[in-house]
Image (cartoon, rainbow over all chains, first blue to last red; front, side, top):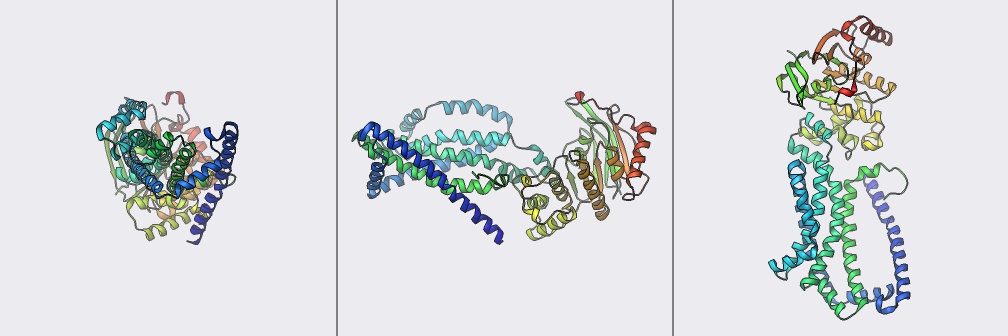
Amino acid sequence: MTHLLLDRLARLGRFLWSGWVGVAGLALFAALWQQGHEAYGDFILPSPLATIRATGELLSSAETWRLAERTTLRAIQGFLLTAALGGALGLVVGYSAAAMRLARPLLTIVMGVPPIAWIVLAMIWFGSGTGTVLTTTVVASLPLVFANVAESVAARDRSLEDMAKVFGAGPLQRLRTIVIRHVTGQYFSALAVALGSTFKVAVMAELLANIDGIGVALAMSRSNLDVAQSIAWVVIIVTVIFIIEYGAVQPIRAELERWREAARPWGVKR
Amino acid sequence: MTALVLDGISHAYFGRTVLDRITLRILPGELVALVGPSGCGKSTLVHIAGGLIEPQRGRLTQGYRRHGMIFQEPRLLPWATARGNISYPLRVAGVDRTTRHDLTRRAADLVSLDRKDLDKYPVELSGGMRQRVAIARALVVEPDFVFFDEPFTSLDVALKRQMQDLVIEAATQSRFAGLFVTHDLAEAVRISDRIVVMDERVRGISGERIVSLERGARDDAAVFAAVQTYLKEDPLFSHIHDTDERRIA
């Protein structure tokens, strides 16, 4: 029991420690940004410090928190919907070669239609409300999750299933103990990508359909030509994505992928 | 009472008949080796006997209670530890946690797996250790019949020998019957009570020989002598090394 706890602590420590590399990357980014600021001036690209100040100002008002909450809630709803639908559909379709072939051109169509076109359609169907944002986010990120899960199911290791069959596992047990477990790794990678795109599309939909949220605030600061504030909004949204990805998606994934970690006994742990 | 009866089993892949009316009975506690050139349908026969493939014709009667199988590759779940892999059949059977723990431990001891290795993932184990885990997984259900599908083909000579000893030991202890597929005649002579020879040309069994010495009492000289006699003097074994891998597809 104690060594399990220690193992967990060690992994948590490594995870936090790896944050330094992330900080180094961010510092590099800030340096480039400062360079750009010095080259183009305050109006085109405010300095990182000015942006941080603008973000601080925004965060001190309750309105900001309300807007961020609205957008975040919508995006999370869309994300959960994508995760559930994409996972379930992918699982079902991956099992059947025929359904897989049918799904491929459909995927190409859905992915080929630009998100902006979906926004227009969704506005006509649902008006300017949460429905529009949800539709657009789901349509934008579902294909990715779906395709990843379906491909992963189709490429599953059948010899493991045969093994399970020999030891008396029925189809449902095989699904539960082998197929789903095999798929989760890829599922969570896809979810990490889908999370970002859900937020991006949610903000875009809000901006274009004029729905109360960060998107509208962004549109406001654009019409005021307030570049620092625009970037501050971006910083806020990116921070939210950061928190969700590294606070929820990646830890779950790391927990499920512990065996891959075990394959790297030394050196840089990613 | 027989442990396993195959009665008139036939099977074809895409119209190519691999097995044609095969009949074989295995007694309780008897280890039967199935030898023959690659592509003669040995593996198919074992998979049919183990219930993995439905035969196109013929009847299969299982007179035993539980079986285990050891495959050519270990076929371990990469995301589960050695312990999780060994206890997998018990989990499938719905055995409760504490019993599972005890049985897993016993099976691991049977194949001399270290306690500390039980918490490792398959990627952290060597090839021999993985195969040990696979053997433990087959033995954990306390089977009275074990299928071996060329289990040691990919291991090196020393390791192969260790594993064979392990099987001989376990078979003597737990008195299970078994069907052991191999293309290594020496392995067949070392392990089995009876050697059944399969032949591609007759798409079935061309004959069988009882291994004369008691299992476990066969030393290297006896095994070597038996193999030499079979290969040089017995016409039954004359085609055992005929392999044209280009035709197996």
